[in-house]
Length: 389
Image 1 (cartoon, rainbow, N blue to C red):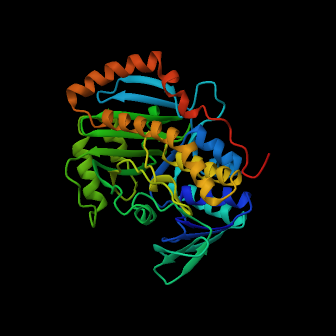
Image 2: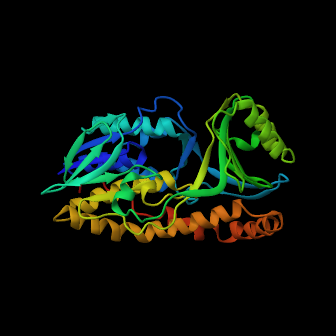
Image 3: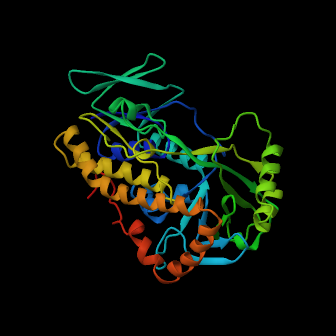
């Protein structure tokens, strides 16, 4: 089976590795070059994503590039602890959530894909398809044409593959939140050590974390704004001054922001309506192209997608049949995760009165039913290696 994967991010590389394990000939075509160092911000992997990486022998190499996070602490804007619970896992789970730079995660997965025998082509952009007597031809901006039995669209939120499958399908729209993150090596914030700290404040959520024993605090501000900001050409000092004003009443966030030595490029969050068409007979979309999710599950869902796709194709008599099986297997779980993501976003964007009511309610929920309410995210069978027993 000849496979072309459009996009070399998390969904694309994991799909490529898993498909190589069932004997497919795989080429990844990525519009951007290899990410190298710390391109982009940080990303978290919950234990379901980590088990997926273990199934393709990538867990140790990825875990070694980040920091293990055992706890999730929720804080009020006034600095009160609302909840302190396991992060991205059940309490009894020996695995720990891992937070690392997205660029490092992608770099490790691309290296693993090459080692698995996949070909990676960078700097070429997918533009559309043409039919073939058998399979499909993927066309690229350079004039490159890849004839393949399966085209996997892992090309993210602004997916061209999604529009090829359904030109009338949903388009991304601004969510009302812009995001900026950075590193503060001298912050020495005790609350950060070994925990993922989330404060739901007056202007949005503020996240900070650090490895146990480290003074290097990683932080992210998720700022509510009805107007989409202009991100181009704004100096770092201007962003930091703006954040200092927004978080003036929140001392922990303000201290961490003031100690910033590295600022990552800001971005805006988008929403995407339900995507009805994930596939046709020879093309499928995975990851953010099909279902951008939050709730700390974006990368983990992308990993699950790649494994599920390979398993479905390995057990089917045809590509078309495998894609139907994949859709049936994945859609119920993804739909449930999307609902959890919507609920999470509503809390972060709540107004002052609702935020206070939410704090009271969250304290009760986290104390009594948090693990029972969220355990389904992590209670997935440990996947077997694609192509294995």
